[in-house]
Image (tube, rainbow, N blue to C red; front, top):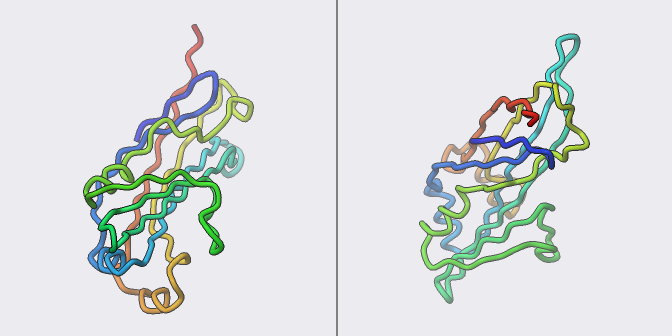
Length: 167
């Protein structure tokens, strides 16, 4: 995980390494889409009180398999996917699961905080979390997945933000 601070704001670059749990792969092969959520929260450290939340952003990724065409589809959106459709999202198709996983495992130049909300001399931390969104599964799978480790996929990391250097 790398945080870039510039005059435009904070940008996050993340490279993750994970494999899909076997139960998730089985559900995908049966045509059940899986939704993943990447959260980034920027907090400002304060010595006199708890840390102040400066910014919080989310990115939603919906992974699906099309058995008829044997292709993988990844949709990315900044808003949750609704049941009535995908809403506003960017989608791309892939031939192999390894290719779509490689695309999911990289987040590049994600704007997580605008410059207006950042002080130049304040210390900040970025908390990143990536997980499978169990609430987006069909109801029978939500009940069956409760407490089963075969559905767990969660990655978390915290990084200090470098102070902005002035030329």
